Length: 255
Image (cartoon, rainbow, N blue to C red):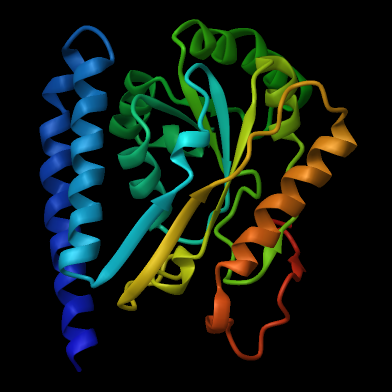
């Protein structure tokens, strides 16, 4: 019963906090530069991290952050939970991120993404969209010395399972010419995918050894996937879900 009460309270705080920060972001869209809006977004995500811990009972530890290069880098992370983004934006300053263009259907959200300097990929654009991404968005992020966050599976994965890693992360790796830092997590144990109910306990988000530039596509994709998945499974420890075949690759839900 206590855990249910905590979950309900967290959900209430989640929506109240989100609405407050969304409304507060509106006037920042007209200010010059990206700095004010990024500071506001990071304040929001750190507030959510605080609420996850103090209200929801989820204590998240970030490990290995010292492995992040000082300059530009691509952060390729496991995606198990809505909480992933809150932790990543809290832990890494001035973070750019990759998202699909479906979010631009919402007028305010589209403006917010552009102001934040997000890398918005045309989901239907094929090779042309990828070329534009390389020529424009990546070069701009690199000139600003930013780190880029991408979830290479493209979906929230169930605990202990995965989706096929999309090769777009390799095209970014090749074009950006900088290290890719894999990130493993077990946060799905505490906040599974899009579920509204948190499960109190400890969770880990762990930055792993960087993959340096220069690998071919097959070598890079294999190393990235094996590194992230093996460590994410190891982080489950004794809490591996029953009735789940660990390491299963799932079909793309959009197919």
